[in-house]
Structure formats: structure tokens, C-alpha cells
Length: 500
Image 1 (cartoon, rainbow, N blue to C red):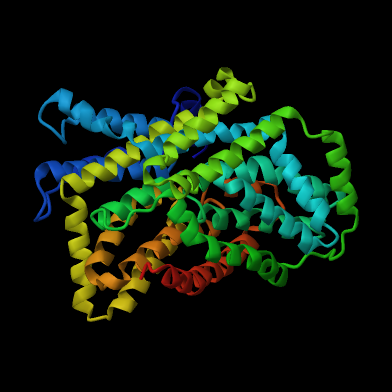
Image 2: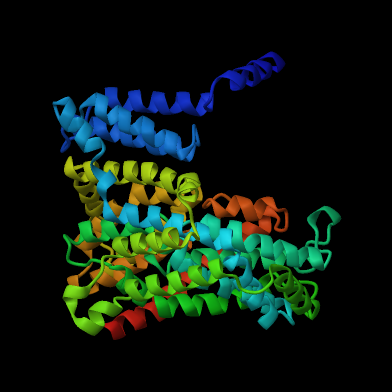
């Protein structure tokens, strides 16, 4: 046993991937590929299923970084010629999603959001809220939540927003009260603030297309499932999620205060602490002003102000708005081309997002999604359940299967389109939009559940302020609360807007 352990350790020094999970993925691929194809699928479609399952499994098991797994998948699709009998056409199919406008919207927005950290504007906004609301621990929680909400439209990396901007502020406040996991004093304020720090993230991610990277994938799937009958622009998504999102954000710090209360309830020193940090930052600098004005311009353009004032011909595509914001920052010197090149997460997103969009598109093109959704629909219909029950089961099953996923993108890619298509067939047309909006909300809310649910969770959990049991317990409670808010408050709001 010891020699086997040494062998694994030795191999890990020379092999740049996780060997056992990698072998499992290859075996699963070959097992599916060699097995008889199910009735209703072509041989090419079944081969593509094998590629898809192996790719998603590789992402879940973290065989290699997501970008590397995506590159491998693209290469396999090209070489297998499973989408086309000719190599040039197979290459075109494998790379066909790289020109997707929504992918570029996320890529450019990630680069733009780099300015929040570089200029210090993100930290300044956070400390302003703490100074305003920080006399009590729950007030600090609301300050963190409001900061998260304010930054969400402009930071498609929910990990960068929550883990890179807000979490350092949260930890600084906890340390100021000697709330340190290593001393066993995390319960003073740190546990509560860490939970609020994290649970603001799924809510804000549900509120804007540009608040987390997989949201444009959700938009694509909704449009595809409804045959372009229901398309969500940046402004329509924001409008639909505004009221339930704000209600959920206002409720969240209070609910966590009830189920995981801090030992220190009153924290007057937090105001002084925030004031001192703002003093260190000094006066608002020119780059921060440029950053803020750029965000205001982008927000107004995303909200459709030119079209509202001057007519539809003046509408600006959301991706074009992102490019405008980036160009402004480059022309003003707030960001440099070197900053653009160094934003690895943006270029990483381009690769893995493009690969996953391609996989979903080819699954649909080859008839796999229709085949799977028909089978699922038949099973639900055979059970004799009513459509409201079927809708609830689809939403809850989709949301809570996130317990077995370590990536929201992988989960959405693997399951969402099929579930949406089943819903379209089972739910009366007047209620399809309600189902679509609840599924869109659930795709972000599911990040509440585990300490590996999204890229942000390991950062917050790894800081040591929250035990595993408490994380999962609070996560489940918040998933239920958030889902109820979006179902009830959101349902009423969407009814007022005329979506169902």
C-alpha cells in the first residue's frame, strides 16, 4: 500500500493531470462509444454523447483545468469528424461558437471589471457601505451585500467579485474584532460575515446576465428551447430579476442572522475601521472617477436608454456596450493593453465557454437533446402527474442535482437545455415563460448549496470561518428561501410585467 502511494506521488510529479480520474473518463468514453446505440439516435449522435459525457465528467472530476479540458474536447471533436465527414467542416463545427456575441460580452466585461481592483474603486465602495451601516454586525452584513449588488452588473466573474474584492474586506473587519479561526474566535463576527459574504453572491449572480459567466449560456438555452419565442436581453433579464433579487438580498442577511447569529451584535468600531481604511486610500483619484463614469455609461446603454429616447434604431447591442467600456478605459489609460493581456480568466472563459456552447449546440443539432427530452417527457406523462407538479419537479431536480456538480457551467451545460425542452412540451404555453424565468433563477441560486458549488465557495470556505456542517445547513436553508422568494415575489412581478 505504501509503495502504491509512493508510485502515485512519483507519477504526479511527471504527469500534468489527475491520473485516476483521467483513466475513468477515458474508460467511460470507450464504454459508451463501443456500446450499442440507443434506438432513436444515429451512430454519430451516440459517439458525440460519449465525447460529451467524458468531457463533463472530466470537468467534474477536475482531471485538468477547465480550459485544458475544453481544448482536449475541441481537438477530439475535430479529429473524430463526428459532426461532419470532412475535416475542414469538423474544424468549423468545433470552433463555431467562438464568434458567439454573448461569449464576447462576458470576456470583455471580465477585462473591464479588472479596473475595479486596479483602481481600488471596488474596495472604496465596500468601505463606504461599512462606514454607513457598520454600527451593528448585521449592518456590516448588509453593507457587504449591497456592495456585492452594486458590483454585480459589471463583474461577470462572480469569483473575482465575491472572493477577490469583497472577501478581503470581510476578513479585514473580522480580524479587527480578533475573530480568527486559528484562535477559535471565528464565531464573534467572522462566521456570520463570511456566510453573508458568500450568500450574497448567488443572489446577485441571478440578477444580471453579466453577473456570472454561465448566464449567457442560460439565455441561449431559453431562446433555443422556445424556438426564439422568449429571448432575454440584458435589460429584460435585469428587469425580471430586479424585484425578487432585491427582496432576496434584503432577506438574506437577516435569515442568516437568525440561524447563525454572531456573538458580537454591536460593532461601533467597524465604522472607525472603515473610515481609517478610506483614509489610507486617500482622496478619490482620477482613474476611479473614470472607472465609475464608464460603469454609468455602460449601465445606461445596457438599460436601453438610447433606444428609449431616440427610437429602436439607436439600440446598442450589449456586447458592443462592453467593447465601448473597454475602449474608454484603454483610451483614458485606466487599463493598459498589458492589463488586457494579463487578464487570464477572460481568455480562459473564451475557450471553455466556447467549447461548452459548441457541445450543447451539436447535441441539439444531432438530435440528442430532443431524444433525451422526449424520454424524460414520456416518463413524466406516464406517471400521470399534473403540469404544476411536473414543473416543480423539473425545477427542484435541476437545482438540487447541483450537489453532485463542482461547476455551475458544467451543470448548466449537462442538464439545462433538456429540462427546458421537456418543460416546453409539458407546461401550457401561458406558463412557459414563468418556468423559464424560474429555471434561470435556479441556475444561480443552486450555488448556495455546497462548499464546492462554484469558484467562489472554496475561497470563502477555505478561510476557515465556517464549518462544513454549518455551510451545508445554511446553504440548504438559503436555497429554499431564495427559491420561494423568486417563485412567489418573482411570480407576482413577472405577472405584472405580463410574462405569463
